[in-house]
Image (cartoon, rainbow, N blue to C red; front, top):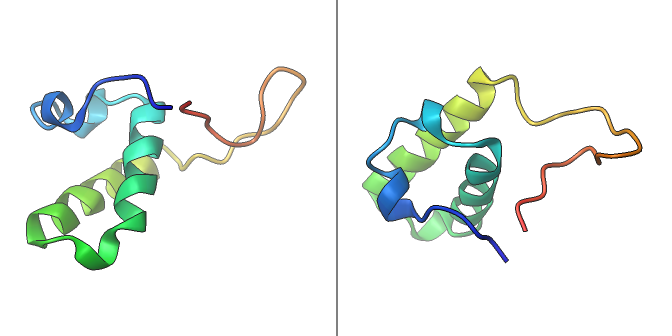
Length: 73
C-alpha cells in the first residue's frame, strides 16, 4: 500500500520535487487508466514521464540491499 503524499498535495509542487517513489507510483496508476484519462490527466502523465526520463529512468543495478525496481509499498 502506498504511503505518501496524495495527488492533491503533489499537484501544487513541481515534478522535480517529487520523489522517485511518488513518480513511480503515479506513473503506474495513470498508465493503467490511460484510456480513460481526459486531456488534463494525459498532460499530467506526460509530465511525470518527462521527469522520469530527465532523471535517467528508473533502471538501477540490483545488489544485496536493493532490487532493480523501485518499490513504493
